Length: 355
Image (cartoon, rainbow, N blue to C red; front, side, top):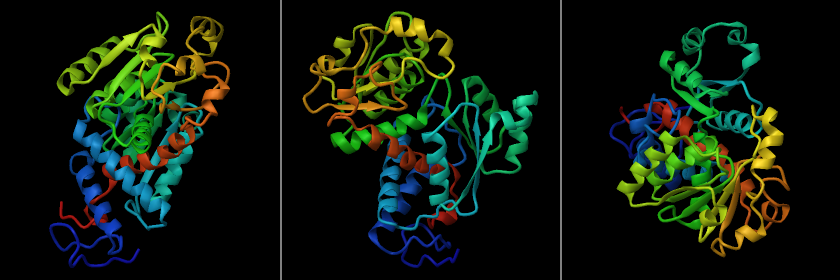
């Protein structure tokens, strides 16, 4: 790609940069990338415990500008020459497509690596695979079952590792969710999210991120399906400092009362298929439907990470109704993940900064 000198460009120096142009968007893009990249460059993105409020806010801001760049056909090849390996032990639609398309739009390349095609499927230690792939690619995204496997991979890898989903956490989805709520509510501060259903990876990630963004989070699950206790305690700790609310209850009505956002997920996640009959019985009374939604704010929005089972966790009239933003939410996986990729993998030449 042709390079140009940064005479008059925003930044601290005269390094060469990918040609972002000279209009206002290029200035905002360079500034947003710089702010996010400053503390996140080269780091892993596994969950929100070790990501600060300001770092999350910087990622959301970068996602906003990258979304504008994509919508206006503004060239933003911030990762030209970079390659990411995408390891999938679980099936995927949104995660795979958004990471592959996002990497392409950023000028890089993504390698689809099904877990059953790797040597880990034949017993190679995760630590060996991590060290080998680190010699080939600039980053790795993993969508798998156990969080401990992702952590082990990150411990041995010398390149950034991104959690694309585990049974415990789903941080990439939550970045897209926060962007979507900001677009529809105009703010994140003081917004109340009611999550109704299984205390799964989404519930855990909501508990981690909400207080750091000044949001109130309420989780309603059947007895025996609550989020991880240590994550609840972590959330309450941050809520005290941020003066926000954390509520974990078995009462959906209490969670939804006055909420700005109602969120649910499938009751039978990947890996839980053997428990399907028991789960459907346990979650009776936890469907998000018109009766429950009447307790929320009149202008509430409905969210679901998809895939959805209409008639189970949510009624058709709600998920396909005018207050559903599920497809905006799905689209924002692309923009939010591009922000994560750019922040972790970009180098100084991408935005005219001398690091």
